Amino acid sequence: MRAGRNLILLCLSLVVMTVLTVLPAGPASAHAMPSSAVYLDVHEDGVEAELQLPLDRLEVAFGQTLTANPEDVPASYGRELSAYVADRIQPQTPEGEAWTVEVRSLEVQAEEQGSELIVKVWLQPPAGASVEKFTLNYDVIIRELLTHTILVSVRSDWKSGITAADPELIGTIQGKVQSLDVDRSGGSLWTGFQSVVASGMHHIAEGFDHLLFLLVLLLPAPLAVRGGRWDGFAGARHSVMGLLKVVTAFTFGHSFTLIAGALGWIPFPERTVEILIAVSILVSAIHALRPLFPGREVLVAGSFGLVHGMAFAALITELGMTSWQKALSILGFNLGIELMQLFVIAITVPWLILLSLTRAYHPVRTAGAVFAGIAALGWMAERALGTSNKAAALADAAGGHALWLVAALACIAVMGFTWSWFRKNGELKRGAVPSLK
Image 1: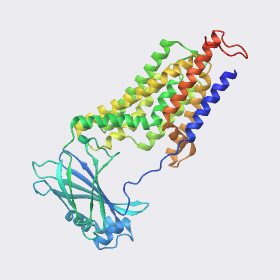
Image 2: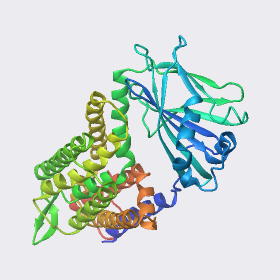
Image 3: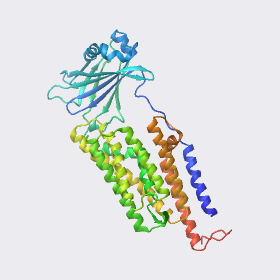
């Protein structure tokens, strides 16, 4: 009994030390105002540019009062601002042929540093010219304010493996140098596919809620059910088959909605999906404490997998791709999810099975389920109300140090199994030190 209590205290101590070392990073702004930002999305037939223009600087360059009523700017000056912007963006081929410039939308967006005008512009190369190499001649604001700075980034370029989640700064326009050579010719189909696979792996590595659902659902997998409660180890065959069935069902579930959502076949209200993911974790946590659906874990994993797949699909739709690129992205992203998912299971499940052979598994299973339940409640509140809370913050922080938690689990598993082995073989007696000869 004393050894069991010591194991529990060790587990809790390792978890607390891990959490206390976490300092969540604050969000970073897209660019430091009052500089402008230009984001380029490279497509097969043209380039979409998004201009982020600080309204106070634009006001000086444009010669009209814009900051007094920022929300009225698009309606009051939309036509004049469109002409102003189109006149100051002049992309051309390396041979000097001019591209076509079309201003498609204007919108004012409030930022902490001040309001800015978001302008969407379509840049079309002449017939036969490549979209991958061109010179961007740009002097919006800077023609009138020579001290102004423009940061130019590629936000989406599938062949180069660049997505909106991680834009690439390619240059700065400032002073009298008001042009920038853009060369995106180094990409390939394979580079784009590799990048999407890596994105899928990265999303699961950072998406602690997805992994927590699966792992908590797997917690009671090695156990038998007796009298409406979780009992001891149910056998190696039962454990392995149960694990495989749950993982396979979850994979089929999220794969279906990932494909359907990414192709636009089903809507996915993001906020609702995120809340349902938290609900799935809470249900799994309760099931890990006491059987809610013994023998039906496969159905639950598949059903909630459908919900998790909708969240994955939202990421695919944000990449900005053609149809064939989207098909490859769905395949690659799903492959990345599976690879990372299998990696996490491979380094976690063996310790769960080892622990299930010992008396230490009950407190560890209970602690894991309670932690998951608290995390789920915190995420539900945060996503439903739009306000942060300590439970959600601690859960996110713990996810960032998941490898330390796995290490703690391995340590407890080895210690618990060793204790059980000595106890079974009569090596440990009350007040005696075990002999290791």
